[in-house]
Amino acid sequence: MTKLIEFTKGNWENHFEYAYTKRFPFTPKFIQEEDCISNGRNPEMRDGFDYTTIVTKEKLGAGTKMWLTCSFEEYGAPLITLTDILEKDENGNLTYDKCHEVVLWEKGMNVWDIFVEGGQIKWNKLLFADFPVATNTKHEIYLEIMEKYVKVSIGKENILLRIDNLPEKVYIGITGCENINRFYNVKIETAE
Image (cartoon, rainbow, N blue to C red):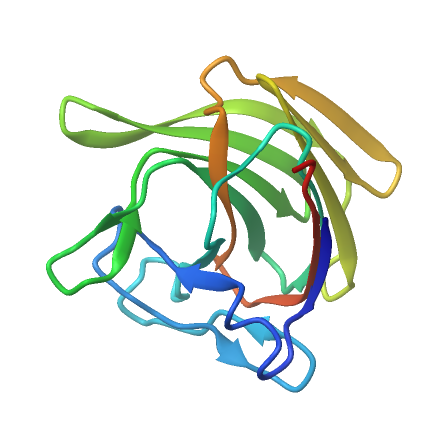
């Protein structure tokens, strides 16, 4: 099954839920623009911008493909977030800590393994792919989930990365952080 979801008002809200990283105490919402959604400014964050995430309402597994159209301002970082555990906090908000992040930024792409050790959230960089990525330009990120692998492409750059601790099924999310990021649409194709 394939779904194309435009991030215009009234078209995306029933497909995703907000989820908040346990790294920060804030629960921001995306700002609805005419043709996209964007994260906002937050003077309480070290970089001055909200860390805003939405995730699919169901877990998806191997064979899932995703095409995300996004843009970012200088120092921005649009992410694809993969997590298998969502928990409700005392206010009823969905939260997560352990995840994998596929990060686009102006110097390429990073993939992070975020994990909990000794009660602390820690991270390990699994990949740094060095290539120029234009700011204030629409980009399409392709992600394919395979058993213990993710395939990621942007433009001519293609990456196949083994992730031994990649869960069998994950909620797939998008996150805007570190400056203003805009998300225009996403297409998700499932094998089921």
